[in-house]
Amino acid sequence: MVGYYKLDKKEIEQRNIECHNIEENIYRLCWPLIVKDKKNLTKELLYLYEMLDIPIITLDEVEQFDFHKNKKQQKYLEEFSSYLELNIKIEMIEEQKLGHLLRVAKYAKDLAESLQLDQKHIKNIYIAALFHDVGKYLIPEEILGKPGKLTDEEFETMQKHCLLARQIVDRFLNEEIIKMIESHHERMDKSGYSMGITPNIGAQIIGIADSYDAITSSRVYHNAEKKEEAFEELLLCTKKKEEGGKGTLYDSALVNQFIEIQKC
Image 1: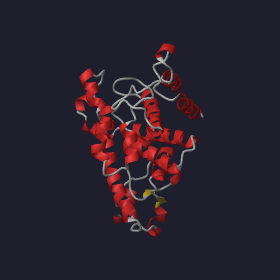
Image 2: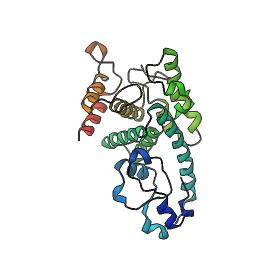
Image 3: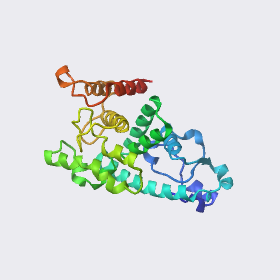
Image 4: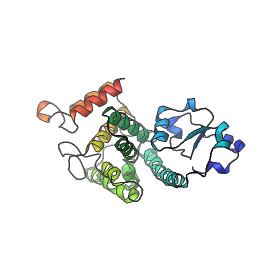
């Protein structure tokens, strides 16, 4: 989606690159993003371009914009767009609609910012959240899109997606981001997968955001639950089983902070 500088103003208008519906347009990356009116952009899309340092300009600003100023950024976005294409395929197979990855990235970024982490760490968490499921591209489609409970063998195969991600993004994303992707299904009591370790704070944040969106979104194997039900579910995942919970999967302080943000 990079390279609109080759089009004249009339052709740009005909391409309908203005983004109205987040679930239909989140992957229309270009450098820069050219829109008719910046006011029509959703918060989620603004987050994406802000975190990737991609300028947003209007049609009236096209002629004054220097498209050749940053070739390195343009090359980076070409690669970034190609990886997001993989995410499109994953989401359409598993959920039959788009939006999960961008919502998880937004939830994770909001929580990271509320904890006042440094900007570099927040950006790494955001990008890791965008790509947290990219390893599913290497999971058989009949497992990824199965409309029902997976067998033990199928679930074991599905669990491999965390570590498989490195094969796809190893030369593209930095080590901190890759480690967060690999460990976003790890849990505080070491009951998660694929390594049975305690996740770092970035992976914990992504895990909470991912779980919340999974609970509140409709998928091929379950209907969406209300926010309040999702909050209760997350809180149960901060308590030991002998205390009526589901185990100390998540840090209770992080979960409570997340819930407060989502209530606003």
